[in-house]
Amino acid sequence: MTNLIDIQDQIEKLQKQANEIKTREFDKTVEEIRAKMQAFGISLKDLQPAKARGKTKAPKTVKTAGATKRTAKAKKASSAATVAPKFRGPNGETWSGRGLMPRWLSALVAQGRNKAEFAISA
Image (tube, rainbow, N blue to C red; front, side, top):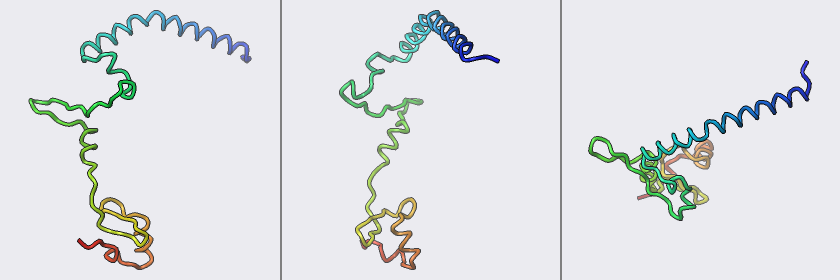
């Protein structure tokens, strides 16, 4: 049966091996990263967080077959438009009528009230 000292010796040997591999492969890895950065046009500035650069980037666009498409992030940001509320609760809560029915309205409907009672007249 192995004891704690044997396991700690094994850990030490494995850590030394890992450090040796890391040292051997370091330069090769750096060159691979540089090559990819050059191929994709990435600069060191691009790798810094937006806050460190002092500004935030606009959503990127992707060019495909002569047209540009907004990325999913850009679409989500632009589609998050505010919708006017269609229902108002007794305590001033509002609901646009989209998505799941809110708890306050579900509770009132469960008590026998009609959803139409809370509709905001246009």
